[in-house]
Amino acid sequence: EAGVVQSPRYKIIEKKQPVAFWCNPISGHNTLYWYLQNLGQGPELLIRYENEEAVDDSQLPKDRFSAERLKGVDSTLKIQPAELGDSAVYLCASSLSPRNTEAFFGQGTRLTVV
Amino acid sequence: AQSVSQHNHHVILSEAASLELGCNYSYGGTVNLFWYVQYPGQHLQLLLKYFSGDPLVKGIKGFEAEFIKSKFSFNLRKPSVQWSDTAEYFCAVGGSQGNLIFGKGTKLSVKP
Image (cartoon, rainbow over all chains, first blue to last red; front, side, top):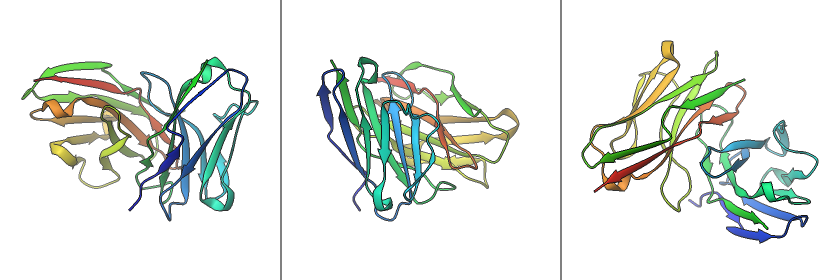
């Protein structure tokens, strides 16, 4: 069974430029998470989807970040414009349901803003 | 708000030493508890989980954890570590609303 797939693995952009990350969750997983992981820190939730609905986006900086999950499968996370402080690893995870199941993580996208 | 505290930022052990990593959470309701591991250059992987039942849970690679409800703790243990256990370990709590909150992680370095 394929795991959670993210692309790209690495991205280097100049500040003020836009950037997008893509995630393909495990087939059949209704719940999808985007996490931000800074160096030396644990993952911090940005947004959680149940199917195509964003049920928790309270931690998403909506002035520059946006996300979508069309058809309740793949998801994209966008930053526009990027700032130096956005340099981090962006993790996607999925689970069968939000409760009583484990989340499976992708490899992450390491973003460097210069 | 829910939170997870991991007491140790960096633990250094020699091979065959015993390991215990602390994890405390703040959440009054029913929780699911997890330990994830991140080996160098790899993605987060589940070590073990607790949903209900026996508070002593066993995971992969000889790891176990004990849920102590009265102490809001879910400490990770291994009787004898190996060099290959060098990794970063994250405790996480899943609440009834479906959110999954992580601690800041503990880096484990095992000297051969």
